[in-house]
Image (cartoon, rainbow, N blue to C red; front, side, top):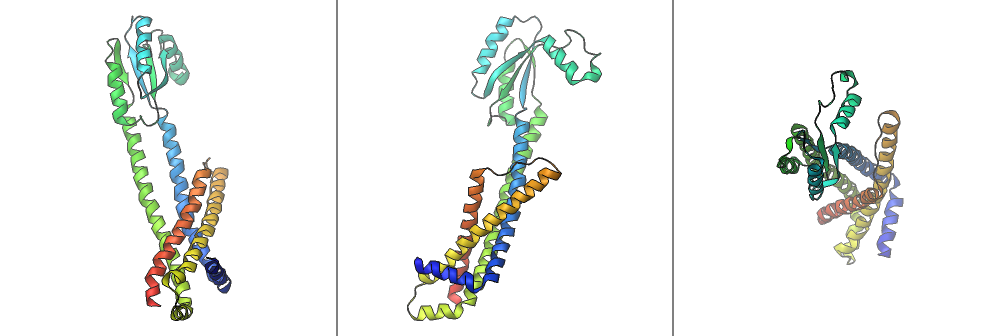
Length: 283
């Protein structure tokens, strides 16, 4: 291993311009992947913010005893999908809210024009259209509930947008990863071809393929890590620029930063392994 590390260091010193070009190329390929991941992260956060607003509102028939409503609210709060607390909105509270949210129509609303209601929100993971519809149907089974509203069309559209964003993120993420592997493999291939004569001599004196391959794998690993670090710095700079001049954006947390570095190292190693295995046979 010590010899392999020494050979890797020699390779960097022997061709510093090629090594710098390789790291920069890897960094820009990972930077493109990082930018896309940053966009996907902020889209996901925005969708989660919208999903938190998904609520089921059940309107209560006039004259229903408050004790009956309280009992029903306690039962609804025990549903595994329901996020506590379940809120009771009286007719007067609904009127005050409507006048606040729609001041231009405040003169239209009259006392007792809006019915009392029960409002409930769902826990994360239970905000898809099917679950929301199921909860709405369960709540509507109470005899004093006149109507249940939850924005069925809006919930469906939100779920479809989330699904499309997830699928697109996976497909494009894999595409960017494949491009990074190809770029890293191409740089390692140039290194293999540049050292073709040296490798041939090593084989003549009995060096195994594993011995010859090891320095290139370490080189790919190092280049992947350095490229990943540079890509993260550029992505962070892009995030700061967007936040300063356009809109507030969230950056990766520590877990995702480490994942990015590990991904860079993995891509570098995989690219090297693929290229070396393919081209050593030609040397």
